[in-house]
Length: 137
Ligand SMILES: [Zn+2]
Image 1 (tube, rainbow, N blue to C red):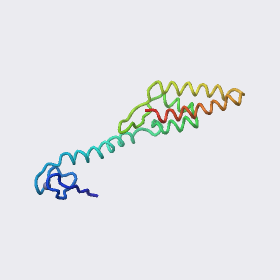
Image 2 (tube, rainbow, N blue to C red; image 1 turned 90 degrees about the vertical axis):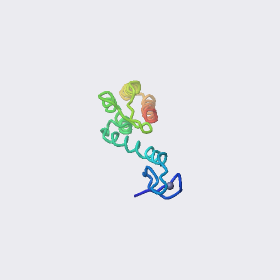
Image 3 (cartoon, helix red, strand yellow; image 1 turned 90 degrees about the horizontal axis):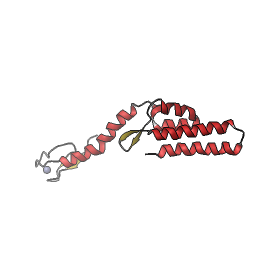
Image 4 (cartoon, rainbow, N blue to C red; image 1 turned 45 degrees about the vertical axis):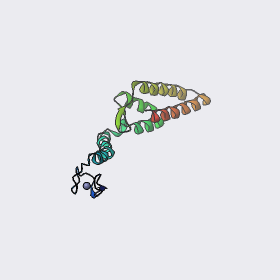
């Protein structure tokens, strides 16, 4: 697929990556910079982010946390958890891991007990914690 833009000088149709207009010679720097800022960062960050193991990506950790919190805690503490913030790859702060661990500990204590109300509370806590982690920036 090729994309054409209009020359900034004469309006002649030229290729979007052309540095100058072949007809009038006007520089097209702004147009080509715009093209590179719209496409390049996305392609540049999705590449490295895609190479991160699936279980170290935030969505996987949140899913794991919902299904089996202790496994998510082990993954979180054995390495970094990565997520995309805009076009930047970021990692979970230690505070998020500590919160996860505390919630998991409370959940395990609750599940070990007989109190149904407490178990319900633990279920709500783990879902809330997962939602909190998923929207955290
Ligand atoms: Zn031109």
